[in-house]
Length: 280
Image 1 (cartoon, helix red, strand yellow):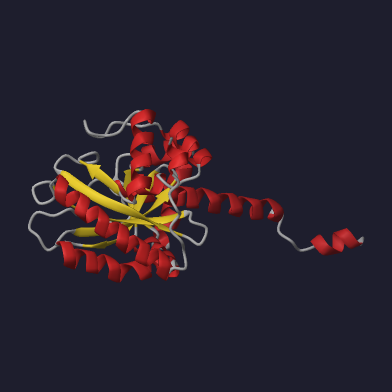
Image 2 (image 1 turned 30 degrees about the vertical axis):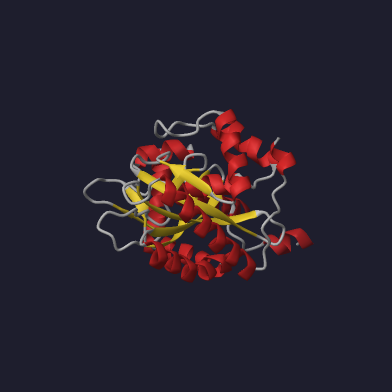
């Protein structure tokens, strides 16, 4: 028997293809998890199959495998598939591994204690904000955002705070790919108005959301930076317009800016020095 034959003797027929098939199934399963993670309300089998460009039968087989491991679950009443507890635990382990989340938590609680309003922390994921941590207001009327939920970059305080400090080429790429969908009548939905708004954010060191994401809601946000001055995350204070009129919104902006600078320093980062020449 030749050397090649001796090495393959006893191996199940098609085992090489099986390895590739297993890898393909893993990639497809992870793709399904990623799509479900962006749809908190869940997705029907047909919707998920279409988004993943898979046959419904293949999608169902993968979902059953993921369900067996506790990664997804099917809502028996609505018939949609959702993220389950094991995926949530893995996501939490990611958050705990990122020091800026743990470092920011006491500062968020301090902001809520000082202002009486909800404080949030979020990061950029492509053209959206993902909310990772929150200190909730005790007020009866308050702003609440589900952790893991998303908001458009251009139509949220945290999103604009992050956009303001992005490199020009990255900002232009986001504008080209995402566009500027109008969320409310106050949303900055043209490149000219958005760029002017981002220039103002750099000048004052904080962003304001004046009912741009939700009518009746005001928000002040500021960016956390890494050691290179690149946006790492952003924090915000949000509440109803009735409690946060324009004058108080600017006061909260200054407070959030100072708090963001404290967190940035604690993380070993640096706040970029604004240069007026870049906005002229």
